[in-house]
Image (cartoon, rainbow, N blue to C red):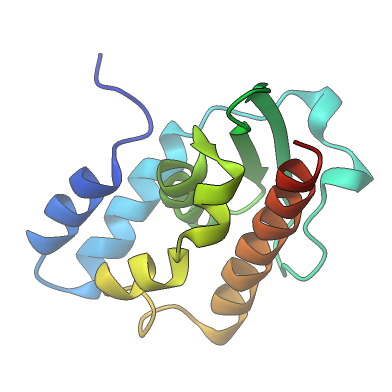
Amino acid sequence: MPKFPPTVDEFIEEFDELEDCDERYDLIIDFGRELPPLDPSERTADNLVEECMSTVWLSTRLIDQENRIVEVKADSDSIIVKGLIVILLAHYSGKSAKEILDSDAIALFARLGLNQHLSPQRRNGLFAMVKRLKQLAVEYAANG
């Protein structure tokens, strides 16, 4: 069974092979279908990403205290948003709080050619998820 989520490099390779935005959306939907559901205990008000039009839950925890490595899990009620979450998981999960703070997911979405194809509402939701992850990373880095 292939590793899930794919690596960022695998995303770039797959997206580079696609001809148009419809094919990219189909791939995002396919990834969204593979996203494991979030445990109901993590579907709490504290884990809601407020600025998203879709319902999005974002759950994080430190999996390595010494190195401040963060596990990121998320879910949504929208299949396309789930696909975007998979890309964010590939970019952020398993990284240190500092790596999360130093990284630029928006640049990754631009590299994948998605920034110009996302609706303003989806783009705002994506920015909200990234903002929330960065806020949590600040907390994890400060508590180290």
